[in-house]
Length: 329
Length: 302
Image (cartoon, rainbow over all chains, first blue to last red; front, side, top):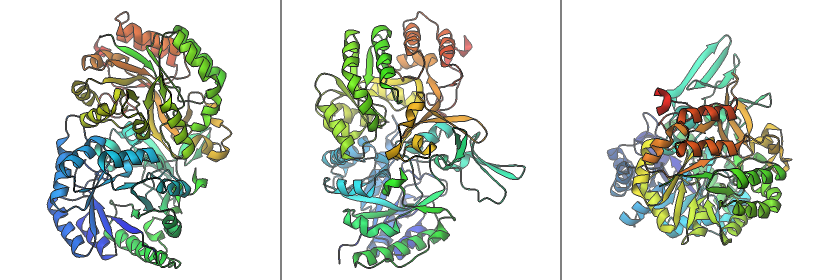
């Protein structure tokens, strides 16, 4: 039996945290209730007290807590990000997820013993970039951007001095994370600065005859025929016209699912796998974490993964292995 | 201090002759201080421009321009990494890092940071300056307040893009190929069909973005000619013009004229409008809102 992949799971609420731990998460990642993290949505995330309780619950059950402080601090207003790092350290976080160079420097100088992981928002997609964060800030692990093929991930792992973690399930950014200003351009709300993409505050649905139009701000992102399932108008998942042709230019409505690739990921030298979905409820967390727990344990024993249908939590969307297969490009 | 103008790298896939002649024209006629060369978006394109690069460099040097070699923005494999290593190892020209990997390679000697590296605050700026950054071209989404804080915090020369389509996103996937039902590996270089980018319209016919291979940019041209004075007062001393498929020598002249007080910003704005044709302008990021918006510049009250 080889070492199992570490299973890193999302929690947007204390209930989701408990659900993730109960379903077999090795670690749970979460953020504070403000712009210091990249899932800054209303009604989500943790107060300081909730983090303390959540960390105690996780530690009692042998799981770890990672706190995402992975937006880019605002010029002239670094305090909220510094406080987030200080509080994560004080309240029992096992690691923090960082993207900004200045903040990584702050954390390394002030909390040298608090483990630092490089967030996917730092977009470190190659050997020199990863070595840089390791050398400068003693980063122990990097969450790889969702732009690499499995072959490229294996090649990287052979050359970098840190652990790698990759997304295996959930929403799929098709752009290099931390380098996308599409939402900012259309809504003024920036993933990098504000921690939100295509925010619900800017979403409108309008009926037009038999059709349903989804808009972000004043801009049409999709038009659904009567009876067609209407998705959320995330900018890069919209339907657009190029060369006179209507298409999902950037990405089809699809959800990442690499549960069938776990043996390949182990062979490629990946340390940890990550489930997306801090904005999802505890039912999603229980179901997905449970399925991946069983698949991870089976893969570690060299057994085939038990069959599982996660269609119920992907809202009927097609499932894809995304950038991990070169055909995606 | 006299404000300086930088011509950014050509982001689009122009035919080698067109690319060469564009830079010859810039070398001979454009009132810019510095000129960025080098492929930033797609390593596959460099094979076409590499052969004419020496002539372009020679002509720019003869024209008295400072040359900046810009590097790839998204590096995912050994071939791309090799390309960046080679540029970083070249003596002579200032190299502009568009990914942290290039910063790592340039560490310890003077270099420039391009707009694809995330510099959002004074702490990151100071850290990069300690590693050798002498000039930083800031991300397009920074508002005026952040620009002012950054400028006050540092002796490093800061640059802001004041003209041209705003780079918004990068991907491993080639949208140009996808729009032609092709795969990136068999792309047939269809991006060469669209020297200013391929229009992406909403289903209601509003042009929103353009795609340029793996890159997505704004449909609008950013235009901060009306904000130059405020940018200068805030301590920004360098302005980037990003090449579009229009008369960039004329664009540079207008910005130079406004910077030197030979032209009122409003008149400059109208002249730029004549050059841009049907493409609308935007300045929303500078004013702290949606980047796509065009808000009244100070000269609206003129």
